[in-house]
Length: 99
Image (cartoon, rainbow, N blue to C red; front, side, top):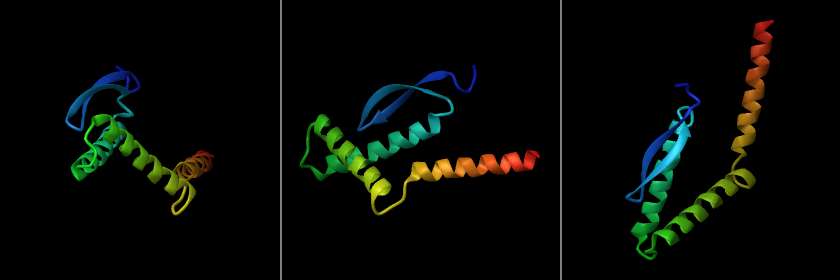
């Protein structure tokens, strides 16, 4: 089985189990995302004002989207652009070292 092949992974978010398909390479990032989402959903549930799972999920998604947009557009920096620049720099360094 190659590292790129898809595998089923069981994850738990807000005390509910879900099956997700991902490659072995994506697994660590997916588990980080699951942990982050689970933490956000528990925080919202523990406030006590929102009861249904659907509303907790929507409020969590809204909060995470706000964090992302704030980082990309305002008070932070664009992480995806940072990663692209690092990859270009790495490719340039590799090309020079190969010569």
